Image 1 (cartoon, rainbow, N blue to C red):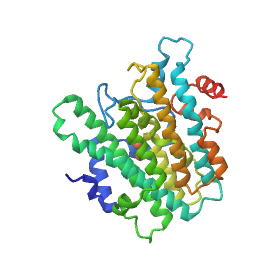
Image 2: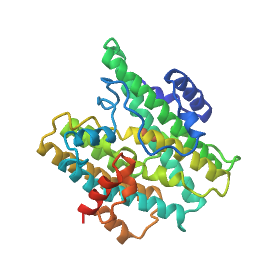
Image 3: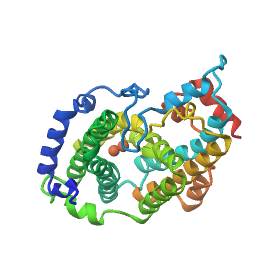
Image 4: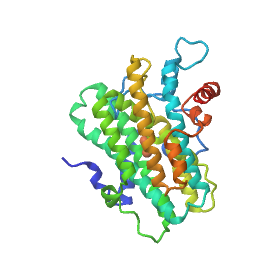
Length: 341
Ligand SMILES: [Fe+2]
Ligand SMILES: [Fe+2]
């Protein structure tokens, strides 16, 4: 059966689709795109019981952290979550270092801007839009079940957001290329826009889902968007021209949405065993290591190879601001950062 994303041949058609989906999803992404920089807290969880794209109830790191603090008046996060964060945080910091080096260093050229934006469009389309479209399409026969309907609404909401991300990055790409340049061919991008490091990440995620079921889904949800490191850096880019303005606007909108997409179910309430936590931590770390390579290639290798090897090995200092982004207090984030050394 045909996947609806095959209709996305031009930006005009894409814009029509965005509008249709946006109307039916009550989205507020557009308003956010025009507003001041967003708060660093995730949006509230959606309706209880809804099951979305990954068959997980939509929730956020914040709820995981709250659940893991239950019963502890001292505000300490539990040891297993802390171990997971100690594994993840240096790799999130690594991704931040890479993209920040690109935006502030000599690697940034017009040609390299076009490359990273094209690859970001590919990710929005193939890793963001397409799986949600497929989930909605494949679930049509199950919409008699109220729980599945609620999940479909979550998927539709996120689908609109991912389409919006694609639209915004396409606009930024066009601005960098110049208004007279031929627009990116979205159909070709979908077929040929991948790159080996991103393929490796997608393959690892598929293997994790296949071999570890729910733990693989949780790992993917936890690593989606790389803790918004690219979007946080991109939305703070000093604006020097009209193209920069669109790059900043795109990253700002995506930042708001992706904080929420880094959802995890309330794993503290789902009774993960110690062995589960240990597997989950390994899966998250493997995916985040692959994300370092993926961003390194997307941004045309802005650091030298030795530093990238260090970063991939978890050698970056943990950045407290990134941990605060997922809902930790300054104290909790500081504790995770210092106990890792
Ligand atoms: Fe996205
Ligand atoms: Fe996303």
